Length: 456
Image: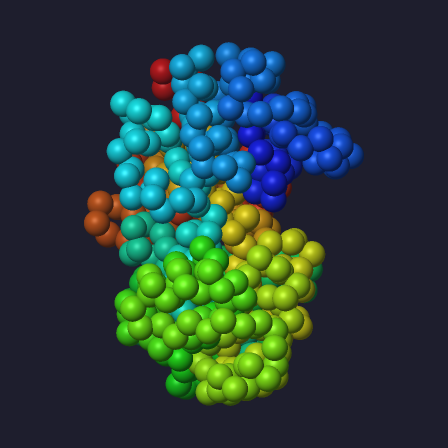
């Protein structure tokens, strides 16, 4: 697939690397010559210097042959114009744009077929805020994702040494839940990522990702963490009043939480104070230990650091725990930081960059894919798909499907019935299926999902 990516910031270069590594034909358009030189040494893609909203530059990039345009510059207007030109010049099949300004997002009709005809809108800050909100709703979880319109939840937890599950086999998990409706779909052990089998033994310190019916999801952290009454996130402090901080504060105060938000920029403080109804807005430096003590950080349920400075987010999250905050959440994008946070004391790390890449993958994957999500710094990918007639997963028990070792079926939906499958479950054409897979086994999974040529 030929894909043109406009803008080589954090999101753009991540998308370019991900899809280039998967063998896609990638062209990156970037206006900044310095960034172009950096990418020449790190990415195996075609690079074009220029504006992505220029018809001439898009023509040089091969817009006539492109199957997808992804516009992710820092300018909403450039992104929209680039997609408009892509539509008028060659009617590119798929167009995706990064749109951050709430003024545009409140008038969604401009993105519809009769106007820009966008297939998908990326708002990394909003996606990150939504991810944090889901995690806060499940005390003790390090990650939470919804599947099948919220009927299923993925819950990530850390297995504590004194949990009764430590030393148990994966197949024994169901006995600890009333209905047995919980499946382990991935384990992160040090640098090792494991798609478990029934005989896989759970070890203390494992980061374990489970899938369960939504009604049972809240009980998962208590069992894995051996905590009877995990505190809910009622008293919350947010460091950073940018878009993520604002989205969070607005949503949390709407749920009745007590919110304090600390922001350096006085003009932004005025904006926050005007837009928020009940949150306390404080002008100051969130890394100032005396300020945090003055604002009773020891009495907090949750500390959330979402500034534009990743290092500051990590340091203040660690400081908050030392000063008595019960739980810390940090906004982090660099892969080298994400991989270490769980070992140094930050409870939850959320990456806007990875969340954005996840949303785009559904347009790349083969088969009838409804949604794609990544977890554990892209070490595992989840695909929500529809089983197609004559594909190799239909009509036989799951235990007889020639599934690769690095993949597992986490759920099957038949009409309104959501099933956490066993080896005896049979998938039929039209069923929705949630599959979890390691990156190396994605091509094999895609092959299983595709309709055989003789069907046509």
